[in-house]
Image 1 (cartoon, rainbow, N blue to C red):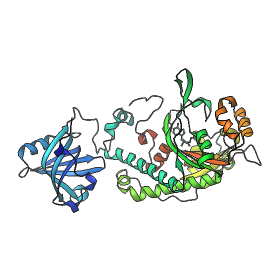
Image 2 (image 1 turned 45 degrees about the vertical axis):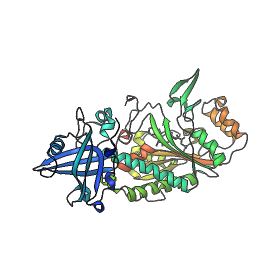
Image 3 (image 1 turned 90 degrees about the vertical axis):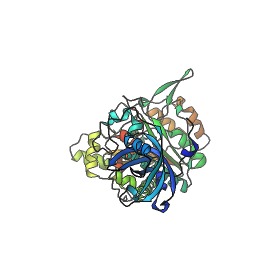
Length: 437
Ligand code: AMO
C-alpha cells in the first residue's frame, strides 16, 4: 500500500506541545484506547515515541468521522488530521482536535491483555505475541531504557578513546569451556556459535589498545533459571597496558555513568515502570574470594574451595552485600585459561566478578600475555592448544599486558528495573524451550 501524500506525518507525538496551539498537524499511530463521554470521544494514540490525546466533539466533527472514531478498536493503526489545543486535563497538557481520519488497518482480534492493565497473563503467554506485548507502554519503556543504557555505554567508552569492534560469531573453538557450545555445520566442517568475543578482543587490544564490542553471545545453558538465556547481549571491553584493578575501576565508573544518565534522561520511562533509581556509590565494595568463602563457611553454607559459588551460596552473600560489589582474586582453577594467575601465588588469579546482591553481572580480569603460560593454562584446563593455534601464533609476535571484562546487558537491565526474570528485559528470548518468535 502506498501511503497517500496527505497522510504523511507532520509531527511525532512528542513534538506536539502547547507551543503548537492552533496549528494543523497530521499524527499517525496506534489506538491505545477509545473512550466516549457524552458528546465527546477521546482516543489515546501511541506512536514510536509516546502518546497524544485525540479528541472529537460530536457537534463539531463531521458525523461520519465521529461515528467511525467511537467504533475504532484499540490496535487500529490510524492517521488523524486536526488542530492542536492546550488542555490542562489532557495527558501531556495537549490534544489534537480531529478534523479528518484515515484508517490504515484494523485488528481482526484483540490480545488477551489491556494496554494499561495492572494484571497481565503470564510472561510466557505474552512472549507468544511479543511484538503485541511491546505495544503496552510499560513493556516498551523497558526497551527504551535498554536503548539508553546502550547509548550511554557507547558514549562513555568512546569518550575514553575506545573503538567499537565486531568479531565473528561463527567460530572454530571454545573460549569459555567446551560444555556450553552450540555446534553447527559450517560447509563441511564443525563450527560453533561464539560464546564470547574473548580471544578476538584480546588480540585487538594489541592493536587498538582500547576496544569494546556489544553483540550477541551464545551459551548452550543447561540451567533453566530466571537469570539464564541461550543468547544474550554481551558488553565486552579489553584494555592494553591495564590490569584487573584498572578495569574494575573502569567498570564501576561505567555503571555509575549509565545510571546517572538514565536518571537524567529517562524520567518518563522510570516513572511508568515505578522504578526509583538511586545514584550508585562508588567505589564498589571489594571482597576477595577467600573472604567470601570464609563468610559462607561461618554461615554453615557448603562450599568447596576452588569452585564457583552455588546459587544458595550467592543468595547468602547477596543478603550480606546489598547492591553492587566485586568478588576478586578467584582461585585460578575456577577461571578460564586466559585469566592471569598472580605472580606471587599461581593458585589465585587476577580476576573478579561484579555482583548485584546474588546476581553476577560481569566477570573479568588481567589476561595471560605470555604464549608459554597460555599453552600451559590450556593444557591444565584439558583443552588442546592445537585448536587455538590461530590465537597463540599472535603471541609469538609479542603481546602487551591487558585486561578486560564481559558484562551481561540483560542482567544489568534486570538490576536497573528490578525484574525477576531475564526474559522480561529481552525482546525475543532464547532458552531451552523457546526458539520462536
Ligand atoms: P562470563 O562467562 O562470566 O565471562 O560472562 C560474562 C557475563 O555475561 C552474562 N552471562 C549470562 N547472562 C544470561 N544468561 C547466560 N547464559 C549468561 N552467560 C553469561 C553474565 C556474566 O557475568 N569472556 C568472559 C568475560 C571476560 O573475561 O572479559 C566471559 O564471557 O552477566
